[in-house]
Each structure stands twice: as C-alpha cells, then as structure tokens.
Length: 240
Image 1 (cartoon, helix red, strand yellow):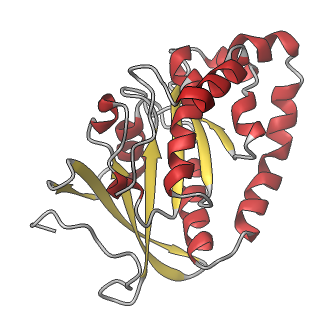
Image 2 (image 1 turned 135 degrees about the vertical axis):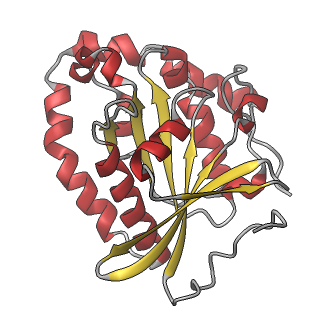
C-alpha cells in the first residue's frame, strides 16, 4: 500500500480471509469519517491511497464464523469537488449513504449521490444513515421517505455518542459479504428487522414527512434532466 496502489478485493487475504470494501457517501462535513472512527475506535489501521487522495480504514472481524478483512473507504474531502474518482467505487461491495439531520440540504442531495453510486455500482447494497441526532433527538420522530423509496435500511445515528453506529456498520459488513457471495438473503433480513422501526416513524404524521421530503421529487427530476447538482452534492463523473 505504500505506493498508493489499490487493493484487489477479488483475492483472499494473507490468511485466507474474505476481503470486502465498504464505501461511505454524502456531502462534505456530514460526519462520514467520524462515523467510521467511532465504529472502529482504536481497532483500525488508516492507510493513505495517495494516488487517488483517498483513505481507507482496515478492520478485521468474523461473519458467520468466517474471517473477514474489511476496508472502509473515506473520501478524504474529495466530495467537495462534487464528484468522486471512479476508483472510489471500483470493487465496492456495500455503501453507507450519510446525511446530516442538522442540514436539510445534505438530505436533499442524497439522490445525486445515489445516482452516481448506481452509475458505477448498480446492484450493491446501500444503507442510509441520518447522522448527528444527538443535536436534537426529536428528529427521530420524523419520517424520511428517501430510504423507503429505494428500499434501503435506515438508521438514526450519532458519531458523537455512538447511537446505532455499531448496528449500522455491522449490517453494512454483513451485507457486503452477502453481496460478494451472491446472496440477497441478508439484505432481506435487515429490512425485516427494521420493519417495526419504519412503522413507528410512519405514525408521526404527514406533516413530519413533508418537513423533510418536500422538494425531493423535484430534486430528482431536475437532476435527471440536466445532471446538475449543488456545490455540496454529487455529479456523475465519466467512467474511465
């Protein structure tokens, strides 16, 4: 890794472990790096991929009693340029899409990031995380239709106090392994587990949904027409 080259996730690890890649997407300053660091705490080895101005955090765990080496990829601020380098998506097995509940624009930009993800990785499992709920826990009483519309597992999380961070990242790891093994069973299991939670958020009323989802459809429609996005959103780059 010293030369900044990218790992090959088709190969097994040095000790025969499964290797998977999990990427985080979202606007700048939504807390992607902080979430990764919160999950890993002291048990990670950050490595710089200087060629692409990216950082990965390596983590070892077990899934179904099998050793797994996980690389969590961090944008290292690249999202400020409104588009990710294609290498960021290459061989990714799962994605955590993050927005900041204190900045509505980061939620409205989710369709832009999701479109770019699907341009490069059409089928990998994607999970959605609403970060910084510690600022106002009342936000957990609101409903967010973007994740439901795209059949994504949804998590209220806090990098600050750790709420749901382990759950979200463990589910992402399991989903990545299941995807690499050509299985959809685990994503179905995640969705079943979260069904009750989704029903609870739905009972908070139509006004709550409008508070956070007004303008989402127009954002997606305009993006589909001209591919444009705001300075803190994503634009689909050309594949190379």
